[in-house]
Image (cartoon, rainbow, N blue to C red; front, top):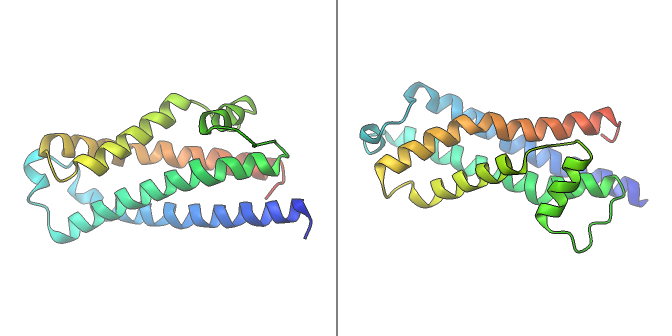
Length: 160
């Protein structure tokens, strides 16, 4: 198998993984949306199903962000023939920005920070947990935009 075909196969596998996480994240969002917004008072009175949907949303948001940031970004640059040796995550993001595939590293970092905060505070402080969960639920649109921008670029360049 040629290097280009191998890279394309890897890229398609990563896209498939992202699609799975995106679908499940959005399904969980649809199930929890009737309970929104999550208030500090409401957070400890959620039904088991509501907690399960929030947990699923947080898990899939995290998995999607990891798949995009740790796999898809690199795979896109690899498919373009970019040298990735000794490149940090921020170098990879900056190169994607230079190529105008994605933008706004600060927003990406904010998504990651919010997600990490939710992972650590979800069950401890009801005020912060409610605030972070609501923020993360709103931020799903931004995460999905990063993914869709990459797909649009790849399709526009006929890479996939």
